[in-house]
Amino acid sequence: MDEYVHNVYAATKKFPREEIYGVTSQFRRASLSVVLNYIEGYSRIKDKVHKNFLEISFGSLKESKYLISFCYKEGYLNSVEYGSLSQQIDEIAAMLWGTLRNV
Image (cartoon, rainbow, N blue to C red; front, side, top):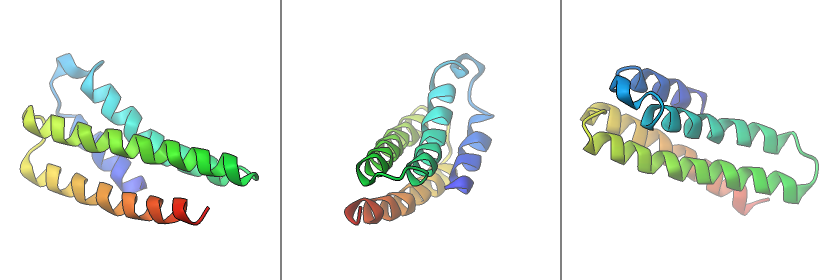
């Protein structure tokens, strides 16, 4: 997950300046939310609370998935970045979904 967030930050550094408070900010916040909610969920003792944070993390991951597609269609991401970030999201989603099913 950490690598994914760093890759999002690297990719968004070249986004148009007028998107700094729009897509750039939203994409960065969504990617960080995946990791931060995952970590916070594991710091909780109650299973229902833990699961809630994992669900929030999964939701942020789905938000990121849309943002990758949007940014690619707008020309902010090239095909290599799009493919790499999409693959990372799919891997994180599989891990999160497996964890959610077992909580």
